[in-house]
Amino acid sequence: MDINSDDVQDDTTPFFEESGSEDGPQEDVGSAARSSDFRPEYRKKAIRSYVLRAGRMTEGQRNAFSRGWSFYGLKLDDGPIDAEIIFGRKAPLIIEIGFGMGDSLLQMASAAPDQDFIGIEVHPPGVGRLIASAEEQKITNLRVYLADATDVLNECIPAQSLQRLQLYFPDPWHKKKHNKRRIVQPQFVQLIRDKLEVGGVLHMATDWQHYAEQMLEVLEVAPGFKNTVAEQQYSPRPDYRPLTKFEKRGERLGHGVWDLLYQKID
Image (cartoon, rainbow, N blue to C red; front, side, top):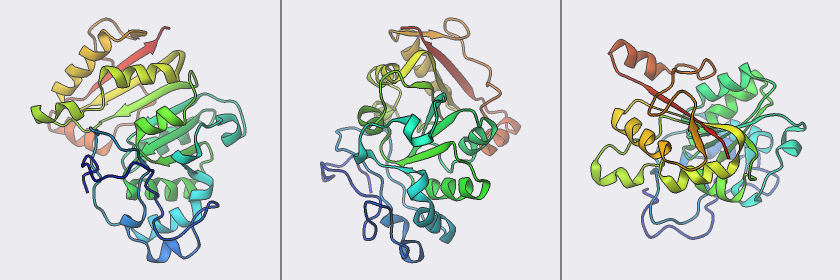
């Protein structure tokens, strides 16, 4: 289903379609649910940076939703968050938009127990897999939204609350007529600026050179940001960002990956 279409409802679409309550899904959700029963929350928009992909959820992913959502899950409709209450402490807060199947985000949360992480994703199997893996590894400094990222930023994330926002390998929308769907646009960058603390960092990465060039073009003139390397320069991959299996395969094939790091200066 392409949620860019005009028949999307204005209200939030629940991720548990048939079962569940305010306290979380009922026990029988995991045994019978299809991936279509777990739907991301979103608000109606004229243009979106993604489409919802159909995909089967494994039994483990479904069970992870049923068992782990009450701990790991955050809801768009719950409104503004207080990270100190959610995580039970005051710690640097990092958000990743579009974490896919969650492997890299899980590695980062595991490697940095002194930081807190929130992932935002619209693909239910990826959210289910991340919850299942986090449960297995007993990761406690991680929470997830199954929701539209711009809606979460607008409605749930307080101003000047983030140490870093991560945007890795967003959909490049490589056809020229679709470039307007790319998430990195001046308005989106200013939304991120509002959520970052002074000194906080926007970290982007892409394996599409044309998109990397657009990111560079947008951020170099974005008010309130400074390139952490030098003007018009890409950054080496920081040690905290794990190499993905796709990057490793791309490196063997000679494909490039471009990292961009911009710090909020005001």
